[in-house]
Image 1 (cartoon, rainbow, N blue to C red):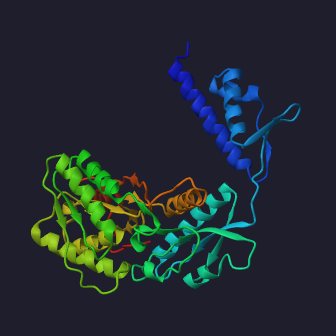
Image 2 (cartoon, one colour; image 1 turned 90 degrees about the vertical axis):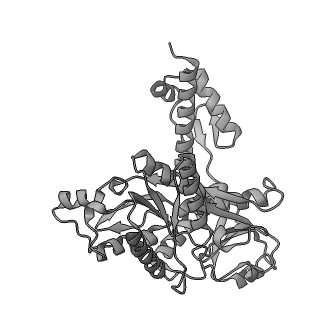
Image 3 (cartoon, rainbow, N blue to C red; image 1 turned 180 degrees about the horizontal axis):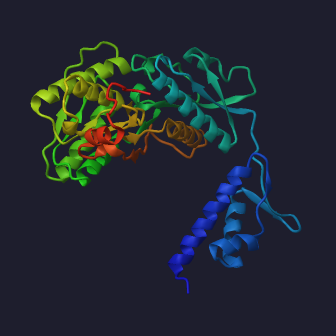
Length: 377
C-alpha cells in the first residue's frame, strides 16, 4: 500500500508533467490526455488527478468542457505592453556576444511566457523616447551592458522600472541581477576538498575584474575556514590595461608564473576561465611535468584546454535574462515593492577529469600524447 509520502510525490510528479504539457501547447492550444490515461503511469486515483487539474484551471492554464476534454488555453499577448532590452555597449569578444545572445533569449522568452513582448533598442538615448505619444506602454527595461566603463550616470530618467546586470549597474538605484558568486566559490572549493585535495588556492581575486572575483574568493575562504584549512587567495597588481579576455589571460599567466615559484598546490580555483587559461599556459610554457599540474576548476564552462573541457561552475546567461524578466514583471505589477533588490542566480557545478589529481598526466596516457599546445576551441 502506498504511503502518504509516496502519494504526495506522485501527485507532484503528475503536476510537473501537466505543467510541461501546458507549456508545450500554450502558443497553439490543444488538448491534454484523458484523465484516466494520466492516472495510470503515476498510479494515482481519478480524484487525485482531478484535484491537480482544478489547480491548473484556477490558474487560468486550462479549461474543461464536457465532450471536448481538457483544453490548454492559448497564451494571449497584449500588444500594448512591451518591455525593452538595451543591447551591450561593448561586445567586442565572442564570449561577450554569446553571453548577450543567451541573456536576450532568456529575457524575451520569459516575457513572452508572461504575455507581453520585447523590443531591443540600440542605445540608451532611445529609452527617453518611449511612452511619448504612443498607445504602447513600456513597463520596464533590462540593461544588458557588460562594459564596466559605462556606468549608471548614462541612464536617462524614465517613468518605468529598470533592471541591470549587477557588475555594471547601481544597486542603490535600480534592481539588479547577478550570479550567486559566493556560493559558486564555496561549491567549487567543497568539490575539490571532497576529492581529497588538501591544499587548494584561489587564483585571480582583484577588484579590477569586478566584484564577482571577490565574491567567489569569499566563498572559497568560507569553505576553507569551515574545513579548518588555510586559505591562499593568489593575485597580482593589475597592469594590463583594459579588462577583456586577452588581458585577463595575461593576468592569469603571470599568476601562474608566481605560483610555480611559490610551489604548486594540489588544486586551484580560477576566478574565471580566462584566468584558468593563462594559468595553464604558464604551466605549459615553463615545462612543468604533467604529473605536477594541479587539479583545476574554473567558471563559465567556456574553456577547452588541449581539446578537453575543464571542471567549471556553469554560469547560464539565459537564467540572467529570465530572472531580469521576472523582476521587471513583479516590479511593474506591484508584486515587488520597496527599495531596489539584488536577485542572485545559482550556478551549476560541472565536474570533469580536471578535478582529479594527476589529470593532465592521465590524459597524456589515455590520448597517447596530451596536446597541450592546443588551448581553445
